Image (cartoon, rainbow, N blue to C red; front, side):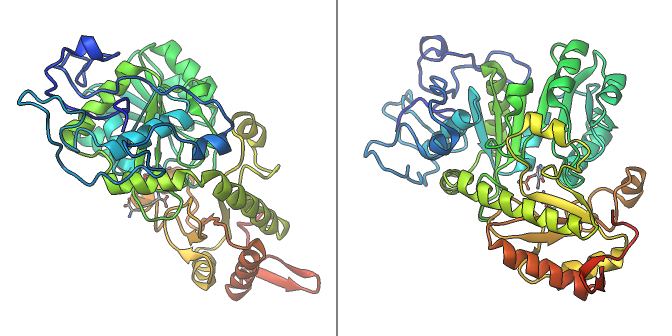
Length: 442
Ligand SMILES: Cc1ncc(COP(=O)(O)O)c(C=O)c1O
Ligand SMILES: N[C@@H](CCSC[C@H](N)C(=O)O)C(=O)O
């Protein structure tokens, strides 16, 4: 295994940090630390098209294993009493994790990637950069868990959080100031599929405060479809539990950035708290990433057909692959695809519940980005951590159904939905077929 991965090795190498390491070891405030774990060099960059880069890897272990093994070891023997080993302890770094981090840095066009135990752990690590009194500007449609963490920080951590409509950059500008330490964006938003102009907001945030960190949650897109770092973001993070792994068999989070000193500051809480991704989960995520393109191609084309099917029967469908999406142009100017998550309203919470319960192929489940299709009611499931009053203030439709499309045969999926819609009484049967029966539809 090459020593040149990110995350990692030995705190006690005995060598001076300047002799070996290209960037300093720092704590959260950027203060120098003793010789510390640090990657010895950034990755060489992307050379091929994404489908190739996802599969093609450089470096392996000393046996040139095609699949870098699971180094299931908590600790590593040292060559001398002064240390000297490439790795010392898996909380600080592990060869399987390093291999994955270097691979992800390459496909995310980042200088550094870090992998942690979940998407929420990734956001938690990022928010450790904040100090009491700092201000955060973020959206009013946000994954429920992110909302919960920000609420916790504002009630217990002295952080001031502004939730605004990030689809309107002028609303963001209204609350930006020199105190804005972080802007946190999601696009498309989960679950209302609103689109945010990353470049415009990043430029405004940096103008208001040059040291403001613009962080983008890229979970709904994955690196295949969107690269926020190329649009002016400072940090991109995502839940590896979703598209990157793709099989709902691993929880993971990824953080990536181009500023190597910032990467070190982000590494500090990972090593300190021990939320780095385990060797086995790193191996699973590495395996999943290799099939991202084939999975996403199939998931997206299925999602497009299903969105069109629902829209053609009169439902108000939120999906950025539909020309009717109010921000279709903006989304497609930033992204290379619409993803595989869509939502629609029925006009009646009870009907929505019946649809969810009548579907057979679609599993009733939170999460998305997986090979199998899922159906859920966000207000009761993924976004239940946002209280009912806040949901109402933000016009969050209680009858919203979210569909997360997998790789199954699309005709089977459409048949399953059609049957569920009929069974739930969501559609009026006519001689020509059926159409949505309720007020919430388009
Ligand atoms: C948009 C978004 N960001 C972050 C997360 C958090 O990821 P994880 O569940 O891996 O902690 C989720 C889902 O959980 C999500 O939907
Ligand atoms: N009970 C969980 C809910 C996880 S939601 C997972 C995913 N982000 C989604 O949008 O479906 C919690 O409280 O966090």
